[in-house]
Amino acid sequence: MQEVIAEIDTWRQQGRRVALATVVKAYGSAPRPAGAKMAIADTMDFAGSVSGGCVELAVIDEALEVLETGRPKLVSYGITQDMLWEVGLACGGVIHVFIEPFDAAREVFDALRARIRAQLPAVVATVIRSNGRLGRKVLILDDGSVTGSLGDPELDRQVAADALAALDAERPEVKTYRLGDEEVELFFDPYPAPPKLVILGGVHTAIPLARMAREVGFRVVVADPRAKFANRERFPTADEVLVAWPEEALARVGVDRSTYIAILTHDPKIDEPALKAALNSPARYIGAIGARKTHAERVEKLRSWGFSEEEIGRIHAPIGLSIGAVTPEEIAVSILAEIIAVRRRAVPGGRPQVTATEVKRG
Image 1: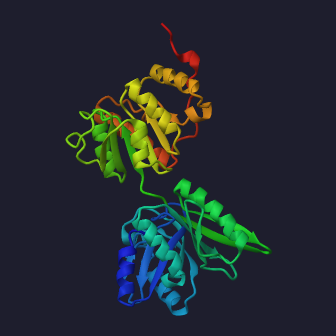
Image 2: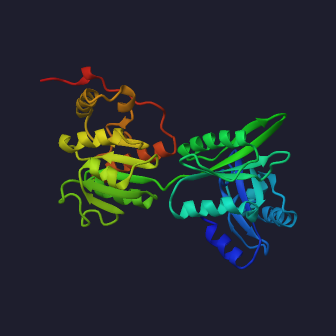
Image 3: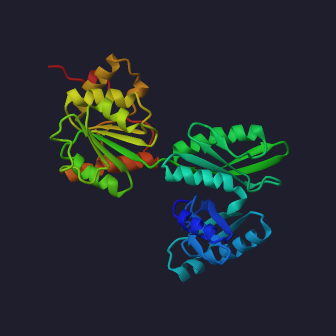
């Protein structure tokens, strides 16, 4: 949605009617994933893409019909090899595209626009298959509050609960509900808050990590209680640099499910309170630098503070994917790769647990 908002606003200011096309299902090697959008004005101008060029002209024709009738529709396209050859794409598959008049759910779209501009999370749930509810739409916020209605209080409640799961997964999905004898299909389109990386410890590895994370779309905060480590000279690209202890830093920046925490100081005086504060937060990712023996010692300390095995298991340690990294830049790559994998749910569930018996005593 972000990529077409500006054009939609311009067209509406000019008095144009606008349709919105969204990929709601994608199979095989489809050119664009579920959630991809294309806005179409009644002048046949368009912005965004649903297929990378394969079916855009067909979607424009369908959108013009939707604007004339005022009725949304779900259309399917098989991306054939002949079509791909014409546009120079080396992929195929099938996409299902939902096309709707933008102004049919103006209240929901206006509320969504405000959330996106404020960088706050929300989910849009749209009925894409139904006898009498096609195109109905609600906006669900991360606190469970709902704008709009699907026309059935029980369905609204079920959809609100499922929307929060989709928001946490940061992945569009389609779910089917039964209302009496009818099956109703909804598309969940999550808009999570922009991901935020909080680096606790302004050490050498943190410098390339902060730069790389910014380049791939993270809001980056670096915090260290030592001013010589946390300053603008070392971190010119960071969004925020704080001279603060971990608990204070996390409280100041705010931690939610779009927050990723990398603990890098390798100093128990900082790392241990950092882990304690991180585990008491809803952060999606917590990683800590240090050798296996070092982490085993931390685990014993965390257990003594009352943290459960499940809570301790949230920690990725040693931090980063095992790629044989040696230099600070390579280590930063391994850390960022692990963070991205967790965000995209590409990491297998569960990590080996360090037991107290693994702590070697002198």
